Length: 264
Image 1 (cartoon, rainbow, N blue to C red):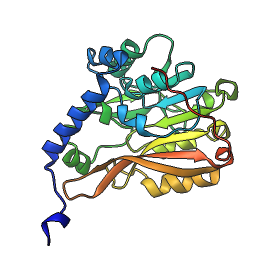
Image 2: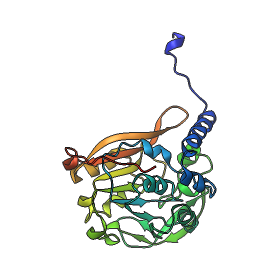
Image 3: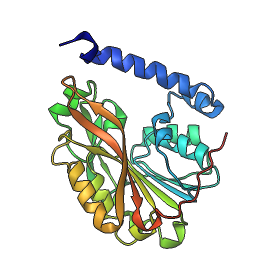
Image 4: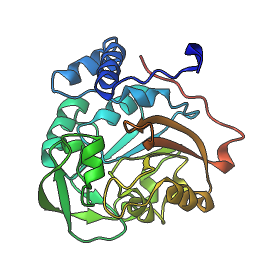
């Protein structure tokens, strides 16, 4: 094979180091992002690449973690009402520290039922899930094995947020480590008020019994959403796709988008 047609394969450890260096460079110009770093929280600047074409009035962050996405949402949409759902107390402490008191924070996990549930806590808190962590997850992302379990409150989104709370345009972001479809099933009474969905979808079963990307697409399409783009693809050492962020837009609003205006 000619040298100019060969694909350079970068070792995963080197690739991860390069990714972190690039991310730090993107964090440094933003004072609020740098302040968050002092608390050990790196804003999810990779989401700034998603070309949302509306200036959202409401942002719902499900699986808010330590505020990684909330930081980006607060910068891009400073006047939006931000609702953050996070069941882990340690993560919520960081969330409050980096985002501030004007964000509405809910100490619950979301799903399709209103019942307590066992929560599988990962050694890396961001990888915790309501579903058991598989060996494939740990192999692909070392250090994400289960550290223990806790019992958390679980509720439906449409029984927590009323239609009056979802001023449009609205964005629903979901990052719940394999439990995405159950969260969506709990939005049935308010899904018609959601304009965009950003959701982490998997192509491989990283959490036991999790629905994969094609099932998420098939669920959202009859709800009025089209897949608008795929971002931040994660691959294993063989180059196989593991997961990515899927951006869905409501079809009825594609013809007349409202331009997004990012804040400094």
